[in-house]
Image (cartoon, rainbow, N blue to C red):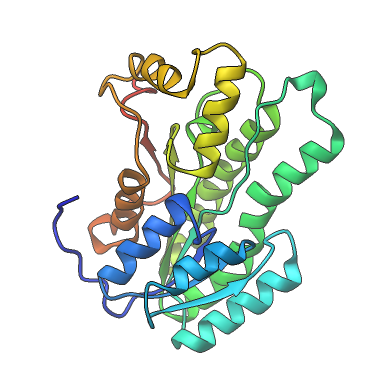
Length: 261
């Protein structure tokens, strides 16, 4: 997809969940622009995909639920790249589950990855950003973080929490030059979460198959299409750039207009 060139030479970026979907497309754009990137992910195959993007990418297998693993990864990233000035929190999980069927294990697992994982990364990375003279954090929330729906209370709680965390960090660390924003994408069919979501929607009767389910959803979007990982990654790149230097504590809804009314 064509777009204006963004000079990212000198950027030192940590991307969680950077081995697939939105995270991987973000890493691709960063590398194309000349940034150095450290990708952390729990999936070895995803890390291999990221590593194949070139010498400007460093990878490390990390479970963001583990504070020890996150702390080590952030320290190594800052050492390998000579500092750290940008962070993208893209790691996440999702599954539709009726509220009364959500087990304590389901609840804990979803919040541990989506919200507590983001907390771990931000708390470890912010001192690096401050030491660099300021920096940027972009958290990948969700349309579910700005409006509620049925059958996903655990996921919705995690993403509303991520939005709240984004705003809190923006207020607390803005005076030290740390800019914190979030993106809130709707369904992205090409991602693993998007594919799982669509298949579950078929099972719930949203359509007879995935293509029909997509078509039914698209009719509810003012732009009449679902998004792509590239759409969201370009929004993330914007928030990481100097073009967004006067923007903090905000949530960029990337949903084809779905939440406009």
